[in-house]
Image (cartoon, rainbow, N blue to C red):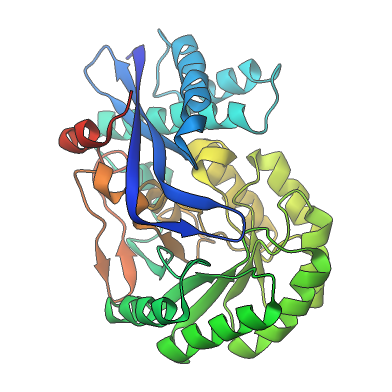
Length: 361
């Protein structure tokens, strides 16, 4: 089997209501859809996303650069294709834009491999489980009012979620405490609660807020300080009893090795498009396991399900519905868990009607 070409399509999925975290204003999802074609009629799919459509062109060009260089090569040799792209990226570096393009092609190759054998990617990786606990992540934003927070939190519990995540990082700590109190009261003591500061705090602010949040029995305190400040994350982690979760904006296994060595987080959160696709995500998970550190994937719920289906130290999955409108298949939930599909490849495919609906020039 040989790769014959790479195709892309930009798409924008607007939200009904814009959302805001401590660091980002997000009116919708801007995505680059990727198809990797082969001479045997099997096509691998992948997706990249960004905050803001103005960032899509650079993502698209990186995908085309690496995808074009893979033409004529066998996509089923996933390690060889990864190593080819890693070598190609050496000139530009192994953080940032280059890893986005590598991740997209790597994911498409794994999708092809699974489809060619008629098995899911989790089977290829050594399936560990067929379901995983999920936390609702599609709401409870920093821009929500108190009443909206209460209503949304109760809605998630009514849908069957046993864990929810909210955003913090307000200028006034008292306001954050009031908002967390509102959500905790709405969901009750048995539902797990996570808080995400989205890198919006300094080390001293994060420690002060984190100590106040100890009373709310948080499952974790996520990205309290800027992602590049690994030492700062370590200081926060050492100062608090609440576990620190981070890693969604880290790149590749070497970045995560630094996090583990510096004890920057108690839970690692590799993001599929930044870490380096399926190949590098699983390497990071295995490395974290050697430190007895759990992993939980950032976003990409549909694709990440195959990875948590195989990673022994995966504990919980983020349920983010942002990409649902683009797929022909839907995620299934049961008793607070997401069911991990056993369909070939990733088990999710772009809906042609949706691609046409959300496509932009």
